[in-house]
Length: 60
View 1: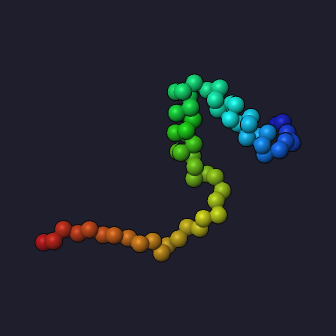
View 2 (view 1 turned 90 degrees about the vertical axis):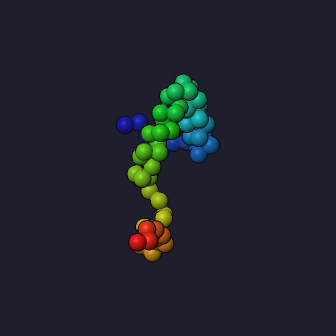
View 3 (view 1 turned 60 degrees about the vertical axis):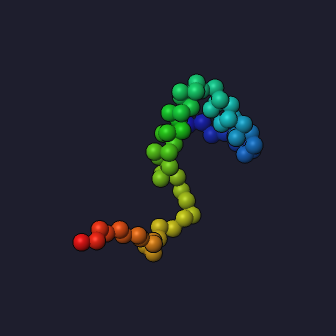
């Protein structure tokens, strides 16, 4: 494993450069892969159980 120390700006530029080097099709697949795996990223949001639920029933 290679560990590199750089600024956030340098890191962002490298990520952008790598992303733009992909073909348009690879970019779409990369985005879809990110959306599929987004739940693995850490977040500060708390899972709440006080959700507002709308139930639609048919009148019989």
